[in-house]
Amino acid sequence: MSHNKAFVQRSHLVGMHMTPDIQFIRSNEVHKILSLGRTAVDCGIADGVIPPRILIGKRAAGFLKHELEAVIIARAAGRSDEEIKVLVSRLVLSREETLAALTKYLH
Figure 1 (cartoon, helix red, strand yellow):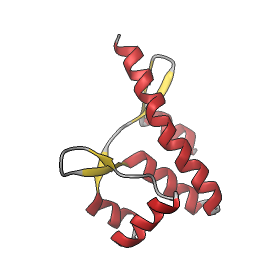
Figure 2: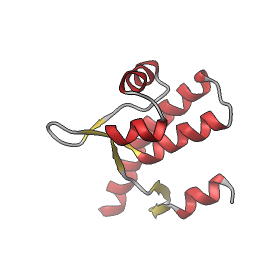
Figure 3: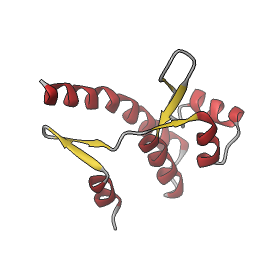
């Protein structure tokens, strides 16, 4: 199955936009998923090769599962750090696009 088909199967159509099946992953799980320690994750975020944490409560933060999966797939495909930085930037920008599509759909 191609990556695009897998994305479509795990996504929802909102208006004319595809939105991913959105799930939060807590930091302790991210370390296991990425096989990286906390310092390496923090350095990856600072370097722009791992999407930044999202505050999900007063004292809780997490990551979007589909963003981490995209980075893992890019790494597996042999993408350079520069290419992954572009991917991460696009993923972060798509958060606003997804919100706009959902908001438009709900109104």
